[in-house]
Length: 203
Image 1 (cartoon, one colour):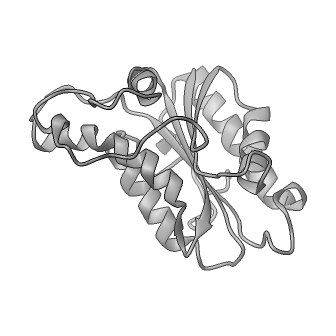
Image 2 (cartoon, rainbow, N blue to C red; image 1 turned 90 degrees about the horizontal axis):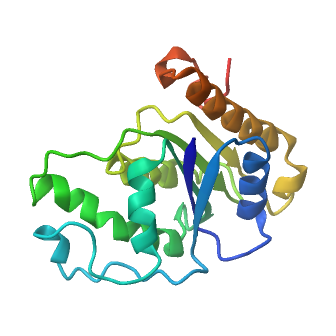
Image 3 (tube, rainbow, N blue to C red; image 1 turned 135 degrees about the vertical axis):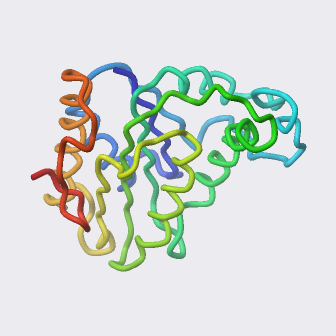
């Protein structure tokens, strides 16, 4: 099993990274993480990908594209900034423009392998998760992530309760990883499982 994690936090040891670490404690297989602290440029809207596969910007994303083709799971993790995904994460996500262009401009028949998706969001206030969740789902759509996502994990009171003390969020992160393992081990579809409407908790 291969999993791509996109980490939109600028803090190495912040709340988002803590939630990712808790998720990974129970996750099997190979993991590749894209970090905004790496050498990844945002899309320049040069439109190279309108007529060519891939991207003309030579940076770390060149290693990510083939891994995305192979992986079974995509995890999008971000702090919530102004009720949205973080700016650095959106910069990284812009480099998946080539996937949009493949379908709408290059009219390619080959699709990215269908994947299971997990969203991990960290914020200071409840209610701010709505827009970033929709943003994440839009990004994942062009990565061919199945709907609904396997799990959406929120920790939304970080000014008062850091993620390391948010037992509910940590539990849900562990459950999400275990569910991905089960889906891969048994070659099951996510629709075989049920979730609550708001938290996507395993039932």
